Amino acid sequence: MSRGMVNPFMEFDASLKRGVVAPVYLFYGEETYLRDLALVRLKEYFEQGGQADLDLDVDVIEGETTDPVEVAARAETLPFFAAKRLVVVKNPSFFKSGKRGGKAGEREEPKPSRREAALLEYIKAPSPSTCLVFSTGENVDKRKRLFQAIKKNGRELEFIYLSPGDLSRWVAKRAGQESRRFAPGAANALLDAAGPSLQALSLEIEKLINYTAGRELITIEEVRLLCRPRLEENIFAVMDAVGSKRYREALTGIKDMLAAKEPPLKILSMIARQFRILLMVRDLTERGCPAREIGERLKIHPFVAQKATAQSRNFSKPLLIGALAALSELDVGVKTGKMEFYPAIETFLLTLCARVRSVIS
Image 1 (cartoon, rainbow, N blue to C red):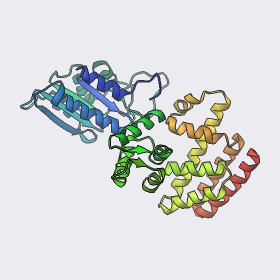
Image 2: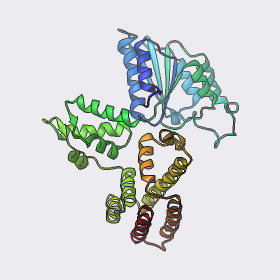
Image 3: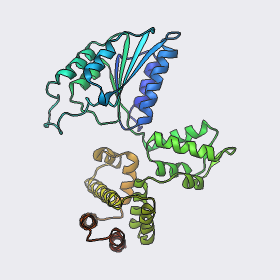
Image 4: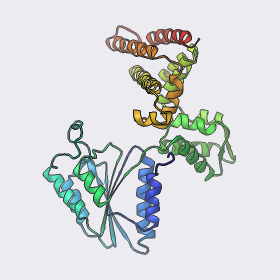
């Protein structure tokens, strides 16, 4: 995480070491690995740390198909031959917004449903023998009374992707735990291929550890051999090639995605998305927005924002606007069958590279 920001997992882990445990938790956010690890640490605390020599009664509930009334009832149930009861509700649907958006300035959702009211009452006065944990990767509606009740009577923790610096340190530490180290450029190549998800990075590192058995160094060539780039990274590579006037390399990137069975319309959608990001980055930069704030303004990961900022320097605003218009026409043409994807994208890239030449030169 960046300086000045507190890592939610580290904060949570430190609180467990101090013996501070809330009766209700809401774990949410896109970083699945840390959300799952927080739950593991909580179980360990009850089983080994704060409740030594005492058993733990664990109840796991699928929240998408379980009624809030039932969740409250199971949380109120006394432990069975145990000192403590841990109730885990995975993927609860009742933290989502009940309506699209909300009125500007609206701080609280209207009165909850009768079924949610039972759970709300439990959260306001939770059982001392139960620790209730909700875990979801979906966005939560912070206006909802359920959310506000947990914030007041328990703890809500948002697990977001780590910053580029913290990701680099995590990757190096994870490799070091298996007596491995990355050669210069190899860790960055891994981050480019796997992205900011610790779960994806963990799986890729496991492959690299197995492949390099008996050796300490993980090379950049081994990373490129074993770690298939994400679609997003392939799009970045195509945009880098276009911005650097490397038409053939950009076209090769498109061919590679097609060979990997990526749907043409999905490729088009991702290219258009990247152009929209570049246009917004260019606009913010021209209006004097500090580079460190761009990711937060656009609600994209700092890792993505850094790359987009660098790429945007190769394109003028009129060129970006024109590219988006051309992509829109191309999208309609492919969907209606009036254009074939590959010849159309080939012409688009050739035209774009020629215009980039005139902008940069």
